[in-house]
Amino acid sequence: MIFTKATSQITKLIHFIGGKMRILKKIGIIITSLLISAGASNAETWNMALAYGAGNFHSANAAEFAKAVTEKSGGKLTIKTHPGGSLFKGGAILRAVQTGQTQIGERFMSAHGKFDPLLEIDSIPFVAQSYSDAQKLYNASKAELVKGLDEKGLVFLYAVPWPAQGLYSKKAINSVNDLKGLKFRAYNSATIRIAELTGMKPTKLEAVAISQAFSTGMVESMITSPTTGKNSKIWENGVKYFYDIAAWFPKNMVVVNKKAWNKLDSSTQKLVMKQAALAERKGWQLSKMGNVADKKALADAGMVVGKVNSALQSHFEKTGATMAKEWADRAGSRGQAVLSAYK
Ligand code: PCA
Image (cartoon, rainbow, N blue to C red; front, side):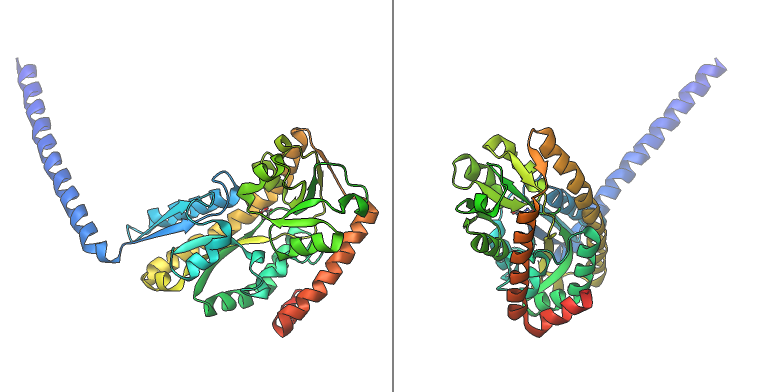
């Protein structure tokens, strides 16, 4: 009897607390939505244009960066990523961000030598042939790069290299003669210049167009990372050979439109810079891992993965020396200062 009474009292108490909790929860929701609407005037949304597929490590890293900023900014900044060139194709991203058509984007730096020759420094063959040299070159060039972008209305956030660049071909390449006349997929002025100095026929194409270009026979060779070959499942398009030249580590950079940047309060700007630094560190690690794993993936898919022979090696070295001189002329004293700081 006493026991039953106590039980019913406890049940009543639980109902009472439950009722109070529901009211508190409702009040909480109301307060939260009031806070959100009060803050709505300084809640920003940025659309982040990415040129490479969602599965690529640069895009995955950018998505993680965007998520971290969105979650940590307390509703002040939401970043939405658009991979695979779905918002703007690679070639249009820098200009789209500069002119404010979108607020943020990632772009392959060395395709923009006309914008600033300093952006091409990481694609001069044989200047930096390892990750540690690539890092040194980045450190030596960063201040000038950031300044050049700033003068053109862009805020630099971070840069991450692609794995070492190598030569892909449908047929085996044992001499410079084997390269002559080949239809060659290029991604910037430097790769076009290599093709010209070698006697290949260059066509500039976005990475997302690679599979189709090889499968239709529009191109039959290219120089890019093991990662891009793997992402394009290049072995399914008749490409059997990968020669690891490892003569440069070109980078992607993430930039923001300056007007969009200036709309953020200083604590949000700090948050973005902090997450950018983390994304940069993570990106370099992912790149180093890909440099090993993606080469293995090419071999596992049945491709012949090796090095060029010494005659080809010296051809590419000579080509690189010519290109270094040409770049020095274009980049002038600014370029010279950066290169001597690197050396
Ligand atoms: N992949 C990109 C740029 C460099 C790289 O490794 C591409 O092929 O377009």
